[in-house]
Amino acid sequence: MTASSAEETSRGMGFLFSLNRINVAVSRAKGLALVFGSPRLREAKCDTVERMQLVNTLWALRGLK
Image: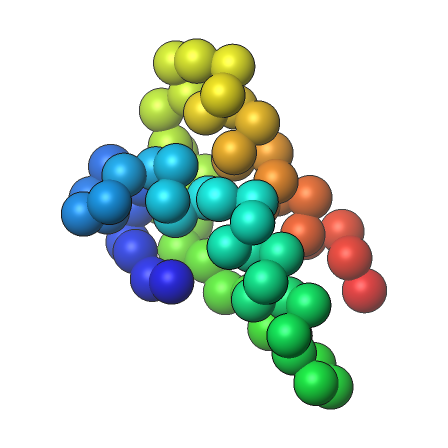
């Protein structure tokens, strides 16, 4: 999953920030899961509650160790 910004993804913000997709990517890691993100993803336009929840999921990963 790669994108420079949420608005530029071909499948939309919901696809990029999908909790199910993030869960699969992290849970299938055998020893280590590295999550990289563009600073522009922090600038995603959250004009609905659903979008806020999607972006919040990504930010929640920052606190995991």
